[in-house]
Structures are given as structure tokens and as C-alpha cells.
Amino acid sequence: MAVTSIVGVVGLSSLLAVRIEHRDVLVRADATQAQALVDSGLHVIHARLSDDADWRSRHADNAWSSTEAFGNGALDYKLIDEDGVLADDPDDPARLIVRVAFGDAVRLASVLIGGEADRGDPTDPLPVVRGSYRKEINPI
Image 1: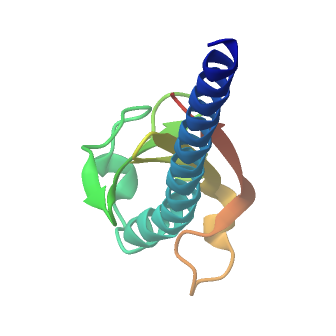
Image 2: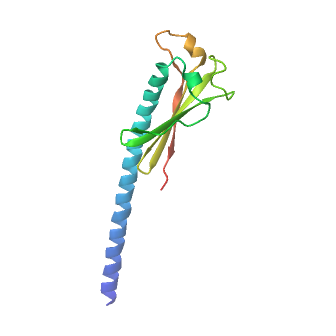
Image 3: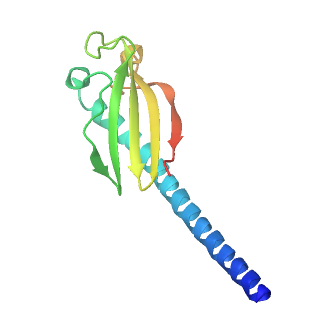
């Protein structure tokens, strides 16, 4: 009887370990897909803003956009100006933050755009001032 109990506990433990590993694989897959989507989303939104000369007046400062379907995930973004008003000074750079949710994973990417760099290369209407950062969020 004792041997049967031990074998049963070992069997149940093995099943639990496999279940945990399976969940880990799913979470990592979601995170990988969310990261790829947020990188793409940052480029897509940046391109949209580059094509819109009035982007500063069309967006509220520090307000998330409507969520839109993006790939198999959901994307939204916001623009933040240091002084809190996007439309007041075209020389102020703005931070573009893109957020993508895919499954259980959420990823953010950000880049500083516009501002003084707008006076640089005329073929690039909305150049990147500084690179991006990524923040990982994994709600479980």
C-alpha cells in the first residue's frame, strides 16, 4: 500500500511539472509574439505620424489612443510632451509610447520623436531624436 501511494505521488508530481512547463512555454510564446508586434507597431505608428503634418494638434498629450487590432494582438499608443501640450511648440520633442497586448503578455516600446530634429533632413519629416526602450510586463 505504501509503495502504491509513493508511486501515485510521484506520478501526480510529474503531471504537475509537465503542466507547469506547458504553461511556461505558452507564456514565453505570448511574450515573444508581443515583443515582435510592439517593435513593428512602433515603426507603423511612427510612419503614420510622419505622414501627418498636423500630428501634434490631432493628438492629446499623454492620452492613450483607441485600441486597435494589430496582428493577432491589440495595440494602442500615446504621445507625451515634456510641458504637457503637444501643439504649443513644434521644437519640443515628443515621446511616442506603443503598447501591445498578446495573450497574457504586454509589451511597451518608446522613442523620442520630432522637435529640433525636424529641422534636419527634409526627407525625414519626423526623425527619431533618441532610441527606444522596452519595458516587459507579464501579468500571470
